[in-house]
Amino acid sequence: MNLLHVWPRLRACNFPVARALFLMEIVPTILINGPGFSLVEIRSVPEAIQFLDEWPTNARGPFFYLAESAMQGAINGSISVEQAREAFTTFCTESGILLVEPPARS
Image (cartoon, rainbow, N blue to C red):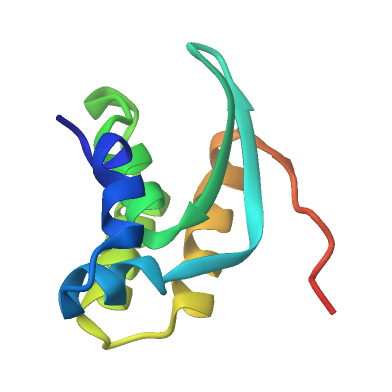
């Protein structure tokens, strides 16, 4: 079972760690599309980590490792979710999979 399958249960969970992961929302969300997968909306740090875990090993380059490190940094609190989002967006742009960035919420 992967993280995306348990995500709805984490949202409803009262355990502090699960609630903390739920609060790691990426705003605005990131829409990506590319060969081998359909449209994906990344809405949280755990979803970004899941996406990175599934990225082909032979296609992992410097921007992948930067994004992966940034997401782990957001999980452990060493960087902000916004900084991790920026690293993930850069990875998506450099990989040619960034579809669109929705406008920021006001």
